[in-house]
Amino acid sequence: MIIVNKPGFYTTIQDLGRFGYRRFGVPVSGVMDEFSAAMANAILGNKPEDAVLEIALGNVELLFDIQTVICISGANFSPTLNGRGVSMNSPVGIHPGDVLRFKFPRNAALGYLAVAGGIQTEIVMRSRSLLRGVTKFACLAGGMRLPIRSLSEMKLVLGGLKEVDDAHFNASEISVMPGPEFDHLRTLEKSAILTRFFTLSRDCNRIGFRMAETIAYVKPSPMLTGAVMPGTVQLTPSGGLIVLMKDCQVTGGYPRVLQLTPSGISRLAQKRPGDKIRFKLV
Amino acid sequence: MKSEYPIFKPFGSAALIVEWPTKINPIVLDTILDYKNVLQAYYHKVEVEIINTYNSITILYHNGIEDIYNEILVLKSLQLSKRDLKVRRKKRWFIPVCYESEFGLDLEEVSSNSGCSIHEIISMHTDPSYTVYFMGFMPGFMYLGGLNPRLHIARKDQPRLRVEKGAVGIAGAQTGIYPAASPGGWQIIGSCPVNLFDPSVKEPCFASSGDQVKFVQVSMEEYGAICERSYVPEFELL
Image (tube, rainbow over all chains, first blue to last red; front, side):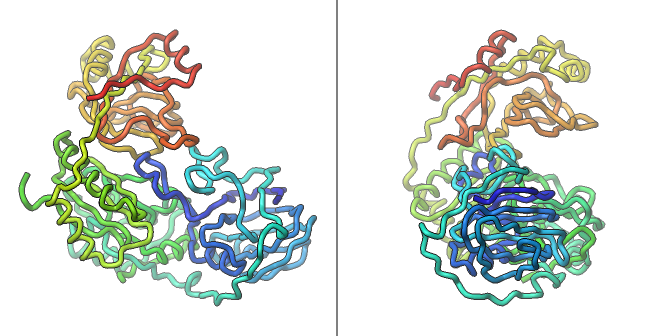
């Protein structure tokens, strides 16, 4: 078990999300930064779909009552094990009674903690991803006990180290493709969206990231509600841009002007309010 | 329908959209759902998610699309062939709603806005069979079409921070039920005691796209009795 001494401000359990339930209006969910979560799982030899902890904003303290191996990736939360600094992006052995702490993020937004064999909490609709209205809890709470597998019941084959790509955390370019309504835009609007820098507003969460700037925009004829998905960039009537993220609704009524690539979503997921980004067509 | 429709277009690298004219219309929906059936049969061995809205189908490929343009050709030929067309059995669901003032928070506002008495509003709301177009907004939320035009009303100027689970609302040309508590700007006229979304079962919602919904007025006592048991609404086959 992992015993949650301090849940942090917004820590969730995530895997690759729920596929197959959008027709009921159920969001996809899953890790925001697939790149970093995949790295942590790969280093431990886990499957890509194994559940990890996604740590936003930090202040997390976890107690292990079982021997295991963990890997921390993503943003640097100055993690410590029993008070001593612990390396990231490499396997770390854990003994019963060990205490793992995450402080505050230094360079990016989201940290990931993978454990050998993956976190074994309840599966709801083919996924362990926490989501209000679908799972019992929306995020971790103090005192929770998260089941994990014992090393004796599994064959641990570590996956070897992976190179961390600094650009994933530092670069401002977010790769996109034209969205279904991109061609409804005028030339000036297209160029504004693709050349300007946009700043992440305070209004950023697992549902979506709202950009602070607006563009001059002539509203086209109204459209009917259409399908949206993580990475869809919506243009609101006031000229604002919202990038939908993993817990977004399945449908929306605003023009879908861009669609982030999967790596674009992972990169944007690590940005914080105030960071500047630019959309780059691939 | 003009021959230029439907339109096929990519949506990112792992999804395709098929789009019909911008209309909310049960006949367009039937065309879309027939095609959706053909697609479901064709893709039964591939991990895809096929969702429809009022005038579109989106096919999401779990493992991406190898060749987008080739896949569009496949979709086009399936659209022309109409093969494997199974008969869809539609259902009409009878969903209880209590319109007592305790639940119908905005009945007075709708009444003064529409010039109809509360009694008339209830009868106009329970009279039609609404078409279930699709689900979205939140798990179990049905987009229903067919609201009497006299009940079309703007959203509230100030959205409520909390609309209760089961609240029945109207907004614009739409009516719907909140499957869970949520902030919301719809005008609330009643409450439905039926659970619309149950994540613990295989089919978490009883209704599907293309079905119909008819609201049935119930008293406070009936409402309370339905709340106390796990109630699946009655239906008839259409």
